[in-house]
Image 1 (tube, rainbow, N blue to C red):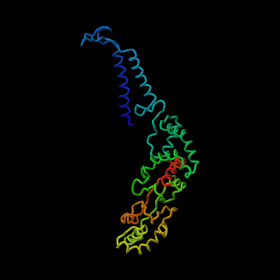
Image 2: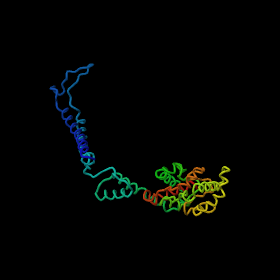
Image 3: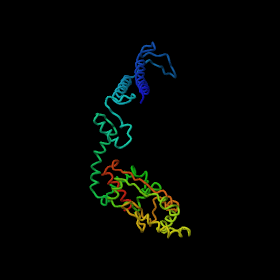
Length: 319
């Protein structure tokens, strides 16, 4: 914050408090020339205005509020760049990464600052970490039978995963896997799901245009679509034999039978589940340009124990 705004805020804040004090003192003094308790000469509907002071309790309350306002401004940040005598602030500002956030928490504690958000995190960790630690000791395949663990995992999923996979976990858009079916690129065991959430995944479907050429792409597309039994035009069906030969370059990942390889995250091409679409146009685009989808790592975001609970919820969706 610039010095201009610091001065602006300070003048308005302190000026308002001082103005209230002056106004209060002015109203407590007799400015009318009429003795206290005497009539002011104003009568309306049989009611006469009397020159009376403010009630004592009201006056005291005004003074208390003024003192409280000054003490508050002295202890807490409120006057521009002045941070307050207590060193309190709502959160660590200008944070751009989890690493910066972690370091800022350490620096604030070493400086003796009272950061409200950090204290809330510490309180939550003290209360809930033992629960997550207990959940993490139970294998995913057993923890899935715990309704409370599933509810906790669902809430964590909605907070961290639903942006891509959707609140119903069926994939928010093209390119985001449906987690409710029984089709897994890297494996659907509890351990594999934990591994995926912990380390993330990086797809590596290369572009084949330079290798196969436009005709080769078209032939390979025809063969790939035939693996899942999709109906094609006579023109496309005529390209299947040549496409089968071309498919040899794809077999290194997808296998000669096209059923994929979970070690590499290569999808099964013989089922009817398509991450980027099953139309001729979609498959052509995939072969031409490749696919490089990214599943981010949540190790630093959630930690091992919470990942275990999220994995349990994800496991429950298809088991």
